[in-house]
Image 1: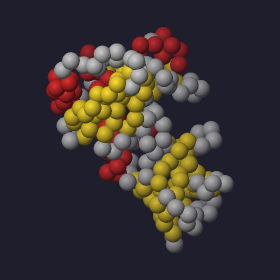
Image 2: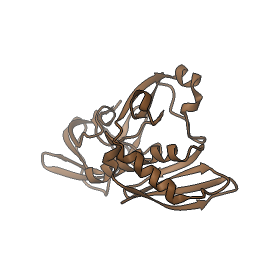
Image 3: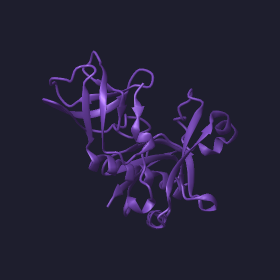
Image 4: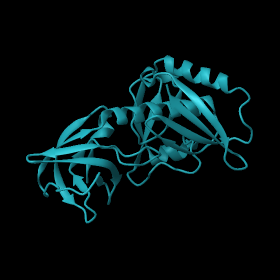
Length: 238
C-alpha cells in the first residue's frame, strides 16, 4: 500500500519516501507519495526523484496493484534499489494548473446543470461532455456566470460519507459514465462553498485548489456536438 499524501495535502510538493519495490516494467512503488496517479480524468503527476548518487525524471504516475501507486520514469535510467530512501519533487506548476482546471470544471457543472457524460483535465484547458441535445443559446452569459462564481472566492473542502449514504443520495453523482470507486466503505466528497452557501457537492478523488479565486479567470472555448445528444464544452485558463 502506498500512502497517498496528496489526499491529505494537495499542496505538498515534495516528500521523503522509501522504495518498496521496482516493477517488472521499471516503475517505482514508494511507501508514500505526493504524486497523483492518473484517474478521474486527471493526468498523473510528473516530477523527479533524487537519492544519494542518483536522480531520475518521473513522466507520470498510475495506479498499481491494490492500493499501490507506481511512478513511471520518463526514460530508461539506473533506478534506486528496493529499500532506498528517495526524495520526490513534483512539477508543481503543472500540478497546480491541473488543480485550477479541475475545480473550474466542477463549477462548470454548476453553470450547466446537466448530466455529465465524460471529461478530461489538462494543464492549459479541460472539458466536460454533457447530455445536452441543444447547444446553449448564450455562451457569453455562461462564461460570465462561471467567472462570477470563481471570483466569489468560495472555500473548497473535502468530507467523507459511507457508501450507504451515497446510495441514499444518488443525485450527488453528476457523471453518467463513471461512478465513484467503491470497496473501501467510504466515499470522498468535494464541497465548494460552506453550509447554506454550498455551490457544489459531488464525489471526487482528484486534487483541487483551496479557494475558487485561486483558479483565476477562465474562458469557454468550443462547444462541439459529439453524438446525437452529447456536447463537449471546453474551458481554458486565461
